[in-house]
Image (cartoon, rainbow, N blue to C red; front, side):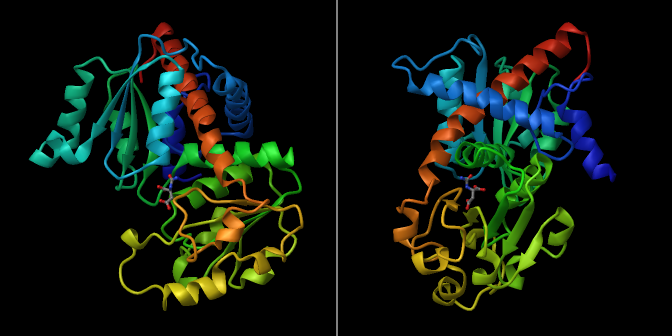
Length: 333
Ligand code: NCD
């Protein structure tokens, strides 16, 4: 095992293996991922109540710190924290002191001085949340809401919950991830989660220019042809072209990309008849997915959004109780 794989495990788990930060799925085993899914399952019922609250984070302060824009992730983290009865502070970094030259460490020190218990952080720099978790006051939990191209562990876990709800299991499943894998932290976390949970086969389908060099080493098979890659799959995960992270021309044109890799009703027919179609959002209709597929009977894209709240409730409550347990045991963060 390499140093980079070992380091996150030490930092995000307590001595007895409880979650205390949630930074990456690397180093987390199948029992812990299953515990997250089971805990999330128990929170789904809370979302269906007329009073959608449980007191697990009552009196706690959660700060949403988003250095990159977000709609779904930020609002579902906020709703999740509120449903756990936490006090929630949303910091818009564009209008905060960071834009006046304050360093990330100084911003955090000031927020810690307000007695925050948890930071939910999205950052364009891979590894920013690891750096913060290593530096933060003991007892404060760090949750990764997406770092650069590296990881987006809560997105992967809400995707796993959606797959488990529709397919009932991971064993024997063939899953295809299609599109801009190169820039996708979501894809990296999904591949890790699917391998840990025992999916039979993970395929990535994309032009060579949109695949990371080492992609097979992550534990997946590469296909350059959409029709071939979709054959017999149970789950299709479409990805957006992340133009904002692209340097130079990686694609001939969006029109050409859609022709070859866009998921149309016609191409969907190559997958199993009961295959589900997923997308982390935001979707670009007519670029990676046809509207008739996005809105069609096999699409579970909006279920993913709903599941995001329950999964984030699970991760936040588990990390907080890990922090509390560690402090009670007199351990160091
Ligand atoms: C993704 C992200 O931000 O990594 N979206 C999300 O969190 N729902 C993927 C994307 O931006 O394309």
